[in-house]
Image 1 (cartoon, rainbow, N blue to C red):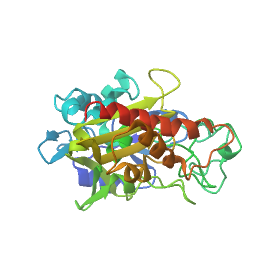
Image 2: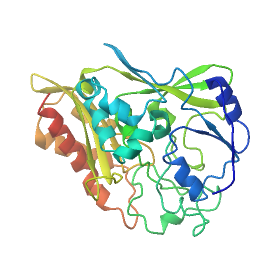
Image 3: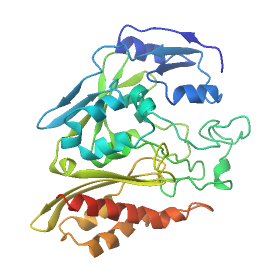
Image 4: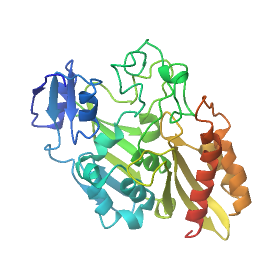
Length: 330
């Protein structure tokens, strides 16, 4: 691990201002960041701890909106009495993520900013060609072992899959990320816009300025959120990233689906909102055959690689299975 210094900040604005300095990174729970420092992917010269900053550890559920402080720990939200009842997909995404030990350390803001688990990105000593880590060097995954890589949203520069669970659930329900900069100016970014497609600049993953940090997350309260679920398919039953996952919400009135929310994980370079499937199902009767047929639309623009074509079959099935589960309680 590279030597680094430790610098404290008394406020969000001070931390955001210092973050702009070359070689400086903010540190919350550190569950991913410290791993990447040990791998020599991250080599910060200065770390600024932020978990002690005030005003970012609140959880509020009201009739219109859920507000979550960026420094709330994942385990705190999962154990909050209102989370499972009012936002079951978010609850499901939390308890299926990582391990209990990591959930006790990981903050919500830090979790949203976790980096890919692509082996080529995380092993700089073996692989120099990674555009996300070393812009302009190439993408080793394109012709390498790419079983766990993206089939949606990739480019010639990067096919690394987004690894998280919580952000997928937040994407399905139009969450907003609250950012604050060094001048104390707050900016609201819809989470589907917060995550960026790799395009020609995969090193830029988030719509977040050099002097901005996440302070909170807001989620609108909707009937679809209250009747939601998160289904995660993975190679083993615990402590594993998704091969494919789906966060869905469903409102059925008189047998007709009047609201459908769907986002996928494990298949895209960012949390993937399946809007074409949503539109195909809204206004239709809740019917298993129709759901199976509409779910196939999620792969219309998929670009499988040499080793991940199984996700072409898996992605629609995960959506359909999640919607059928939500339909049982709709």
